[in-house]
Image (cartoon, rainbow, N blue to C red; front, side):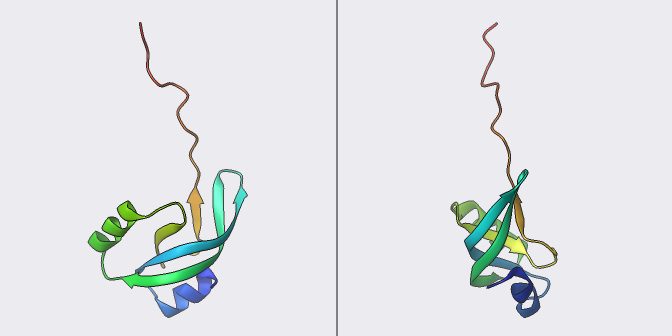
Length: 82
């Protein structure tokens, strides 16, 4: 299912989805195709689901025009012994 379809079916709410297909563009993982798991009723439930999510499961709000995940580089500095 495409993101625009999800947005039309569930306007202005959080949804729990599984990422089926995505590609990397610079520092973003652009999600091309998802499987909708279920809508989420409020931000508290969205936070709980986000904390339980794994690498292919995401929580996103349909107010967003595009569906992407910012990729962050791990910190180079682990500690300082000085």
